[in-house]
Length: 439
Image (cartoon, rainbow, N blue to C red; front, side, top):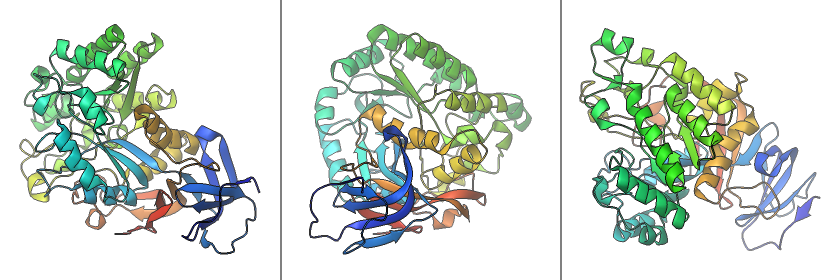
C-alpha cells in the first residue's frame, strides 16, 4: 500500500480497482487501486482490500482529474429556454467535467453582488462545481467598470465582457491594473467591432463564394495586439479567449517570449473545422470567432503542441432550435460543446498522435484550473476526489437528441468518436456513470 488517509466515515467508501491512474501534474501514471472516502483520496496501492467498500471495476480504463472548462454560457437568468445552470451542469457531468465557469452575458448581466448571490444559490444545487465569471463593465456596455473587489469577494473567479470587447482602451488598462493588484484574471474577447460589423463567417474565398458577409482575421488580431500591449504595460493578468487565427497565435507567442503575463485558450471547433464546412443551410457552423482557414487550424494545432496555447475550452453556447432555424445571417452565433469536447479531442488529437493523453489532461484539467486558481482533482493520497473515468476504446455516435444540455446545436452530429467518459465523480460522489447523469 502506498498510503492511507484518515478513518472510515459513515458513508461507504469507494474502491476503483485496476484503473490506470493518470495525473501528469503529480507525475502519476500507474495501474493501481484507489480508495475514495468522503471528498478525498484515502488510499492508493496494489491489491487493496475491498472489505466494506463499493467496488468499481476499472481495468482497461483511465482515471484522470475531472475536466475543467473556464468558458461556458449557461444563459440563466433571462434565457432559460436556451439553458439553465442545472441543465448546463448536467451536460458538464455527462462530458466528464467536474468544474465549469459561466460567462456573465445573462439577463441581467452578472455585474453586481446581488447577481452573483442569485448565481451562487442556483449553483449550490448543481451536480458539478460551477463558478461565476463577472463582467468587467456595467451591463457589458464598455463604459463604466464594475467593482472588481466586491465581485471577487462575492465569488467571481475572473472578469470578462465575453461576447463584447472592452473597446475603451483606458478602461481595459484600468481593469488589467486591478487584476494585478487584486490577483485576479481578465478574460478578453478580442474583436474589433468596426471590422467585424455585419459579418457571419470568416472573410475569404469561401464567404465570397457563398455571398455571405465576412469577418476578417484582422478583427481578432488587432485587438489581440492591443490587449497584449496593455498587459505588458500594466503587468496585469490577461487571458485571451477562443483564439482562432495564426496571426493571433504568433502575437501571443512573441508576447510570452517577452515575459508578458498572458494565457490563452482554443476551442475544439476552431481546431477541427474550417470555413470550408460553412453551409448556409446549417447554422451550426456559425460561431464567433468564425471558423477560419486550414492554415489557421494547422497553426492552432502546432501551438497546442508547442504549449503556446494553455488550455482547451468549449465556449459552450446553447440556443433554442427555433433560433438556430433562422436564416444564416439572422441566427445567433455559437454551438454546444460540453458533451462532445473530450471524445473529439481523443479522436482527433490523441488517437492521431498529435498529443499524448497526459498532454490532453494538462490542457483540459490541470492548466485551466491553474489559470483561475480553481480546486481540481489530484490522484494522490489526500487529493480532492474530482475525477473522470475514461474508456479510450469506447466508440459512440454524437446524438444531440440525447444531450443533457437544452441546446442541441452542434456541427458534430452523427460523427463517430472514440474515447468517452464513463464515470464522473465530484467531491467523492458519482454524478455520472455509463452515460447516465444522476439527478
